[in-house]
Length: 430
Image 1 (tube, one colour):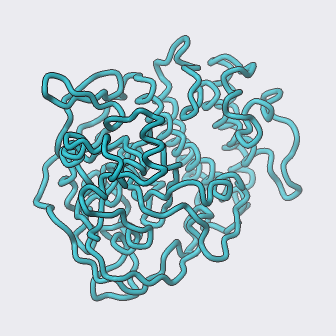
Image 2: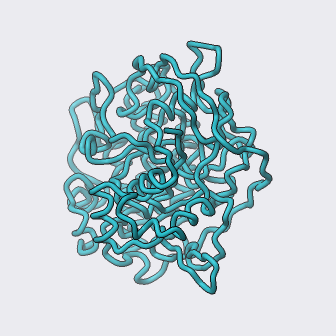
């Protein structure tokens, strides 16, 4: 476990509270059968998921000490209900879960006791690490709750509308390439084990699209019969397309000559200038073959996001610099509540002139999710290690991602068939 910089008790408590407010907002208004929902491989039952968040925080912040994990919980049999490493996904709908009221009380009781421990053990570096782990873990679940609401056609949360003004941002950025330090540096900031540590990588010169692929651009592929022509798909991709009977991106339909899509519990005309979203890695790769393009590697993506032309050795935390994200630089949680046009947020451009590398939509890369050299797993062993080699890597965050969570070195990962998540892609020239 990496030692992280010490925060004040108030700051740690605020991180945990911010994550909890988002969680509660996302489940507010659920009723009856919505708390369990249908049994699907790609979502958790919301009632189980909020209980898991309470359990996770209790497990790491209250029950863990220098002797390991202490037995017992504020909730009887909590380990048998909520330990995601031991409770098979398909069983989570059938467990004897506490009702909504008791589950929310358990979450609140854990939060209160964590605050008490933060005050009592303010100098414990391990507690500082685990409090941040729990805050960011809950922030990730909040994003999952958001796409669960989309999957299950629950209503969209009300959100402020971001500035959708766009500027010229066409074509490719010419990126010189070179050697750089890929991955996170050990500067005391919290990072996940799959980001550790920075290691030298050489990137050849390449050209990267300044924006993500739009709905209009992807619709050209669909209209041209892209889903029916095997030549655009690799073997695994075509097998997925056939088995899924996919003929369009998820949630699209053609109505009276116009492309429409389901957006949460409503329908809307397909926004042509927004990034295509809810496409999986196979669909992104097929579009690239059709268009004569390719997906970037993780190294190319991070090089374009972090480095500065003619300034070797400089590596930015965010594409625009080291200043934390704002509503002017990135479309993250709190900015808009949905995607915006790919030409918006010019203030967030990278030094190479590439737009929206942080926020709006997750971007598939060509690479399988793999450990960096010298990988050592962190205490939360199930976070990264089980998924190396069978998931594809994504970068950049989306409109539902916490601004405190994301950075240029942050790596997301999904199996190449997942298209329920808020993922799209940008491309490079061959």
